[in-house]
Length: 481
Image (cartoon, rainbow, N blue to C red):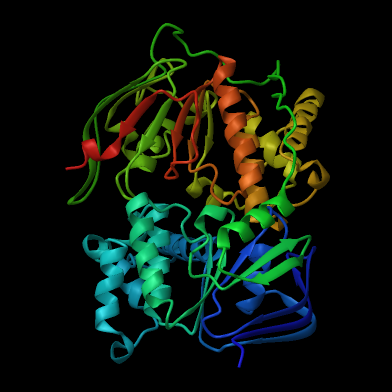
């Protein structure tokens, strides 16, 4: 008996991406890990097993009780909840969906395993947020909720696409222990970019290339040796990295007062009703003073960044000084954004415009989502150089939504860096990147920081994603009350 049987399958995704799987068999408790560079079809394979994509030919047989957690599910859930914010247009009083309602949706009370419910609430630290509105969660907390919901449904087959992305270190450790516990009852398919995240209990390795399975093997007694072999199959020589020039017509200007701090927050605070995210935060960012911001999910890292960018409504009730402007003194949001290059998980999920890849990078010159201004010839040339640097020059005209998540991430990183901003804010920038592209991006970020015109503000949960230029550290738990 097999939980998954794919034979001579040809499936179509996003109009242009073709997946060709000659054969893939997954038996009960044959935990399978799918690896490969960005854009090779890892997530498409997971989606096809979950029943998505247009099957043009072949046989797809999958167990009936399947749960699937991916960025796509996270995006769909967030979008559906956002639609409730528009309910007042229809003269309907919007009622916010609570975390508990989403967690238990579709489950009958008789079907809920009480011990498991207690376990997932503990592992994903959901107890204090069950009655909170879903829309108040951070992206990391949203991912925890989706994982908890999938596990609580007790599926026969659980497909996890980059499940550790966005989780803090403690959550990762607790999640690992839970996966090991339930691995004797539930069969897993993991889609991973980081070889370091391959679970010790996996039974089969699959390597994707160009929409097909390049190589697959059962796991023997030396998993590390097999992963080394796959790494060699994926290996690419990194060329010497050189940043494209700064555009002379449209670029991030110098702050109004070059001798003043880029950012100064005095006694900053963010709270929602009875919930205080952080308080008593005093912080000064000087030019060329690179900072790393750390803290567990929900500690306020993204809220803090959004206070600086002006994307958080409470930025106007706080004492914030940015690039020579006092917040709330009549400055426009665009006057602030011209100094900033920005990428976060939430920004990636919100980048729904399906413009071409070239236009995505060009939009960084104008701080827009999508391109609505005429780019100069020089800007087009520079954007193309960034795409070459990211290895995306063959996909210049490809619509953004048709790219893999990892390739989308690379494009948005180029967008954030294209104007050599005064302040580059990167929140979990390497999520979704394979090991080779991750190392390239880390090197590019460090190169931009060492260039001397950009100050770096960096948030990440992975200890191995080190930026050598960063010498300063802000721990958000110091300001949680």
